[in-house]
Image 1 (cartoon, one colour):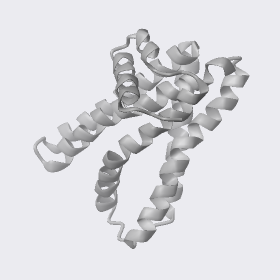
Image 2 (image 1 turned 60 degrees about the vertical axis):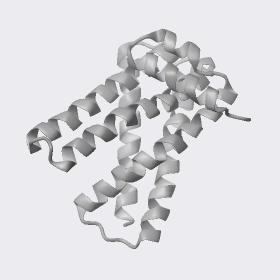
Image 3 (image 1 turned 45 degrees about the horizontal axis):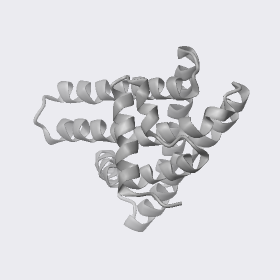
Image 4 (image 1 turned 30 degrees about the horizontal axis):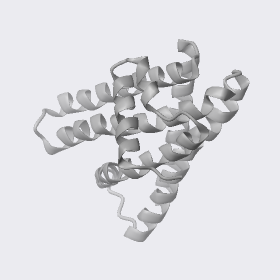
Length: 189
């Protein structure tokens, strides 16, 4: 299972096309079971930005846990977060009679995370460095979060070929799992 730079570029381009609400973006993403497995390399691409966001969040919360504890707890939470939704989606896809589209949905959703982070990180940094008034910075971050959820909705609706409310439910499931995992990890610090 080799992943080349070309594979990554093609997959991220497909995710970018999906962000432009172009369903043809799926054609650029390997939607086979092997492609779904390879798509978890997106977690490696997103990791540096996630680490920066985590540092910002922990500083804002005033958490002063030992560095090794933070790395261990948040590292495990990161892996669990990247795997929880695909596992839940596997079961939901079976219930929706969409098992054959599961690997494509996982691959598209994982590569979409790279595009999402490309929008979210700058919004958070702009909000935190003080170039924008506090209210405007918060509104920017909130708006980007809403756009990210709408984007994920489109990706899941397109990749699974489900209706809008079903895709919205899946986005809410992912949000719930992420919040649950994040809160559990934060309580360990």
